[in-house]
Length: 202
Length: 298
Image (cartoon, rainbow over all chains, first blue to last red):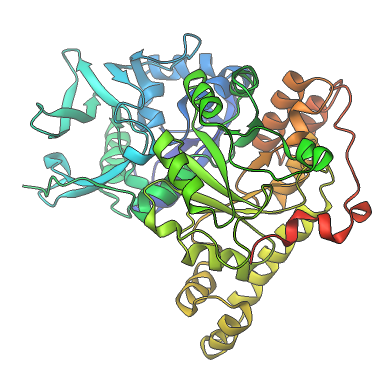
């Protein structure tokens, strides 16, 4: 592909701008997606951080949940950070019963798994697929991945208090998800990885 | 091997939490039932308090932090973040709210101030704070004290959006002036704004606040929300406007839709239909100066 890919950012709620800046910094073009027509234009989709309960609610009210599911089924590359990870997960524990997700990522995710906002934190992670340099990761009322099906690649885990590694970054084919917010730190390596996934897919 | 040491309460974690609320509506609620209505309507967070500003205004008396039982009940009833208000300068109320596990504290002029000289030293807390401001200098002083989010004050409990407009335009205008100044003029600008030079220089470089800027105080209709978003707000606080109206469920949904679709008048028109009565409201101009909340905060 010669022109840079057009990456949509699901623009229902959350830190839309920060993802746009990170994507632009790694050479992608961006557009905001609020309608089915806008979704049809993009080569890949980022689902930003925000409140997953609200995002799910708005996707339903804006008649966008079915088009998003169809796009996911059709193999549109998608990356979700935090709330975006919850939106992509096939199973969500402890969500409101009416919370709806897009699916496409065969994992089970727990919402607010680390506690309330006072428990939000930042930490260095090893994410070898983006290079040896530690990745400063910001976790805000973050979800974690409780279990993954076969076919899902674990990209990073977090060691906490002697417990076995908690899964915080995964990839399954053209789907990528992180519990944390790379868009808040200026480290664009996760966005670079996603844009590369989109390029190879196109 | 990465340094696996987790750090809580950093500026990035506090400010980042506010980033997650953008393009959202935060609604005042006084019980679990209202909190659920707000969440169902698409509120991005709820503000737990005992009396909405319109009632504080009507009933008078000293307005304080809410009962911990009531805050707990709201925390347990919704999955969205829960905010609560502490009085200006009342650091012990803030300590209690942090201990209860609220996700954000609003050091708010809506409650009766506890200290007429000092605000809370918010840098000492793990929980993030939002504070009101009527102009850029006030916003930057709150940031120096450790606030991680700013909201324009408006005039709470009135349903009159005019002060919210004035304050948002003033903050944005103050920022625009800074961006047009040469570097040597920023020293005097910092003096005049009564704000830290480093912050003034940062705002001049960014062309915006280094934190999220919401709007508050008098927003009562979908059109009010759409206007404030077009004036540059990142999101909207609605206090009395929802639950003092004729049909809170529909109005809450409509304000959420108008905030998201603020740049699409067709959608705002559609959601503005059939909402029943808006809160009755008071013209700010009819409120004696001594009873105006915008002047609380220094």
